[in-house]
Image (cartoon, rainbow, N blue to C red; front, side, top):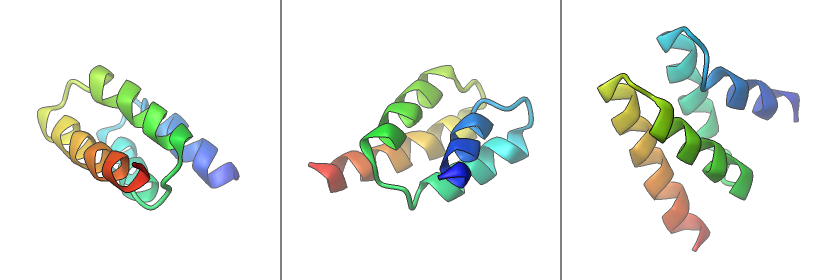
Length: 66
């Protein structure tokens, strides 16, 4: 959907607020595509708090998809 596409795009926004909002939205979108996007995001993110939040969401998603 367009919301998912937009949220994946916003993961790499220059705005930390957009990145945080995107993480919150994508937390409920458990798909392989979202897992791939979160893996890229976690390796890209330089803000420690957002990186930890992204990594925690990624771990929960990976566990749920196994």
